[in-house]
Length: 70
Image 1 (cartoon, rainbow, N blue to C red):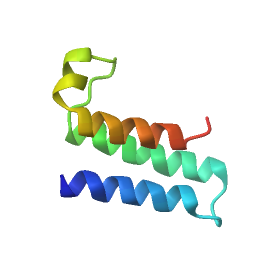
Image 2: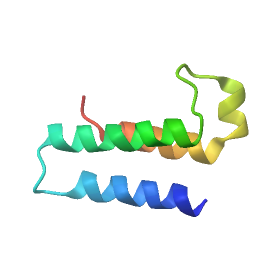
Image 3: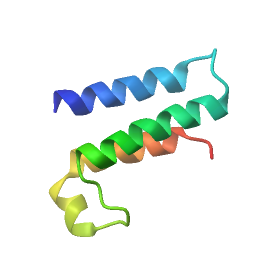
């Protein structure tokens, strides 16, 4: 869980960084999401069974996704 918290904190710092444009933030946040997809084997398409089995990972992933302004 420590790793998950680290990724969320990293994303929060990126989101709050006033020196980055929104495009730069979106790119950095997308990289974190890709890292999470690989590390936690997040399915490409929503899988309700996976979500139920991994609520913490899903919630962090969703929060980071919501930080993007795409």
